[in-house]
View 1 (tube, one colour):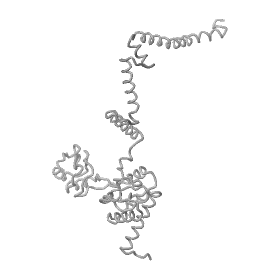
View 2 (cartoon, rainbow, N blue to C red; view 1 turned 45 degrees about the vertical axis):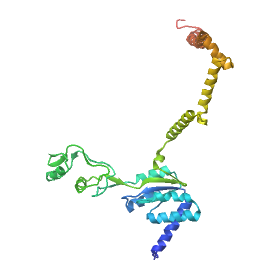
View 3 (cartoon, rainbow, N blue to C red; view 1 turned 180 degrees about the horizontal axis):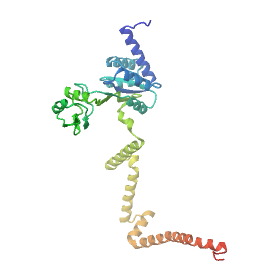
View 4 (cartoon, rainbow, N blue to C red; view 1 turned 90 degrees about the vertical axis):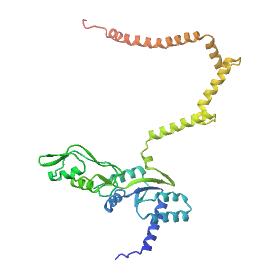
Length: 317
């Protein structure tokens, strides 16, 4: 027969377990567990079995254990978890890929009816069609301003109706109607609200970033640094290329209006004196480039004739 632990012993055991997990795992998902049942939670644990552990508990106990463990180990990075332990939350400790774990958790959502007083997480729209309810229920639909008609002895909804908006409380009439129509509009499961990774805390939205997103963000950052550097004349690696180009233009401009010169400036000065020389050079270069291409085309055209001569006879020989 198993010995029943006292309340104090349970706290000690829970504290030891949480501290052990903090030592062994550097990645933690903080998940909201509103409206998640015990059976659903057990299915999630089974789905994550392998390299992830789900730990639920009272926020006060978790905060206390985290603070004491941070103090005893001298690792203050654990304290970043404390502000996240608000509301009905749990912890998923993992050594696997955080994104894959969050995707597995998202799969275990269960449909739920709209209960009275519940805050709607999404908009609820009743679709048009036959409800299967008898005509005596017409007055019930009229109370909710839902247009209906009688079709083949049953009530039929004519147009789609937005019954509940996101963020609104579910009323008794709305809950009763959805129950009559056998509509379970809501789905609940563990929702990742924050990610802890070796002391750093970030939003789960970061997990959805692709390599292209990261490249674009980096490019935008470099562009902003470059623009700022040029605006305040502060040298940075990002702006170095533009600064060299601008400096070269300035030196070239000085050389053009003064007697000072260097090889690159000589070409510019010659162009300014007689632009027609460069126009002739460009035309000549274009003609030179096009000549080999034309010769190749002529060779291709002549190839079939040469092959006929090599045969030594024709169709009429």
